[in-house]
Amino acid sequence: MSTKKKMTRRSFLKKTAGSIVAAGLATPLTEILSFGKEEIVVRAAMSMAHFSAIDPHTANEHTGYTVVAAMHNSLVRNPPGGASGDPKALEGDLAQKWEHNKDMTEWTFYLKEGIQWQKGFGEFTAEDVQFSIERVKNPKTGCAWLKRFEKVDVKVVDKYTVKMKTPSPDPLFLTKVLDWQTGNIACKKAAEKLGELFSVNPVGTGPFELKEYRPGDRAILVPFKDHFRWKKGEVPYTNIDRIEIVLYGDETAADTALWGGTAHLMQAESGFKPRSELAKAKGINSWKLWPSVPCIVRCNFDIPPLNDIRVRKAIAHALNPKEAAKILGQGTDFALYSNTPYPSKEPFGIYGGLDLDNPIYPYDPEKSRRLLAEAGYAKGLDLGNVYSGPWGSWKVLYEIIQNQLSQVGIKFNLNILEAPSFFKLARGGSNPLPIYQAYRFPDANYYLDEFLHSRNFPGQNMGHFKNDKFDQLVDKAWTETDPGKRVKMLQEAQLIALEDAAGMPFTQMYVMLLGNPRVDFGYPSGDPAKTGMAKTWNQYHKISERIRWRT
View 1 (cartoon, one colour):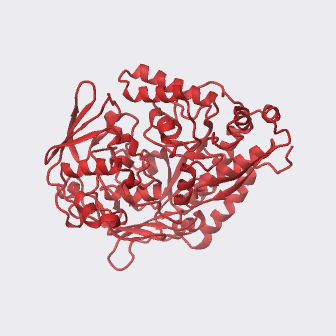
View 2 (tube, helix red, strand yellow):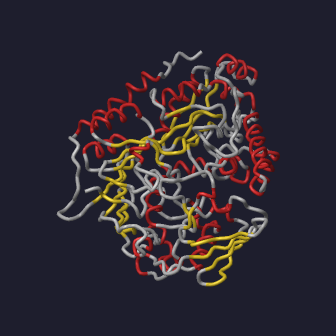
């Protein structure tokens, strides 16, 4: 048995609180209204050191998403601050209306007229929609989600009408063209003129346009004065002169910027208790981002001995999700646990999710050791190098997993990589024990398809799980228009994955958002500082046309 000291909530809290408090004491809080005599600048402090991308179709983490979302529009969108798991709650963005045929295989979008592109590239038309869909589908673009449109046929009917056809019914089609990943509409003329440079000089129709991009430092955005919602008077023009998405490299530096007043927005995935206490003392607002982020632990089926189900089950029984949630959440309700990866019950709310009264693999270290012995690893198992991305909660979760597995004699070396390197390695299938924290449109079809379907390897199926029955159920669920039948398919698929120990539930975490009270997001659903929750599931800080500085 390992003698390694066990990580507890108290030891973890002691470890994290010191650096946060030190950052908070570095400089007094000052409400900085202007940088220069007449400029109002809002800075968002990001703890990463690099953007994965700022391209509307290749950005694959929230630092890049924050930039992309402020610059672009989509055919339909989640109302700012009012995201929902129901596609019926989506509102028109670039499309003024849409319709579909009876079997949901043909979708027609009628576009708003007179919308202008940034940088003087003229009017947005149906050709830009067609171009964007084809750009996502093109493997050379490098979009991780290109298969969503793989079999979609796009036709320009006229300047302001576009028709899309799918080979089979697609009741969730609107969720593929919303303001997220594949739904961003890019400017055809700009992409053709700029060529390869377009990826670092994107052009959108959104309320903010790119003024300057400094890789490894920041993206500087300024208001696009011809943005259609401002120009048509739908909402007042912003009084903010500049928004900077700044890379601080780590959470301590980001904390220092927020608490010291040189940054106004920040997100955190750890240190919830000390940050909550410091925010209250400093007059900084804090709230949760909905929905919670599921973390599942996967084993790479292509790396022995993880292809042995006894070893995978041994790992599952060695994990203690309840303890992990207490450590990660530091006794707050920012981290929870569940018996399944994607539960439907509140407060999780994944449509088509699976709820179980008891876990399939309850925490049982003795059973874990017996399974290891049966598999020929009575003296322990070394998994070698395991890789994590740079995000705070990922590192914390891996440390918890490393500690828990060590109690049954399983060890590994943890290597922290920057986002681009991590995604390239993990999506290529070289990570023995990949975890993933991410939220998608809150429907089980999205999670199961992206992270466990065999067609997504190489890709997001980082454990290379392959089960024909599972794949068939997930595929059928995409096209099933009967809600009851669809839910049963999704739940059966989840049971298959659980029984094969392909993805073990670990934690459910709410991202903590922090903001200077002078920043007004203008969400119609209410001020998240008062409601305690921002329903902006697809961005940390949903910077929309409604953002203002409170004077």
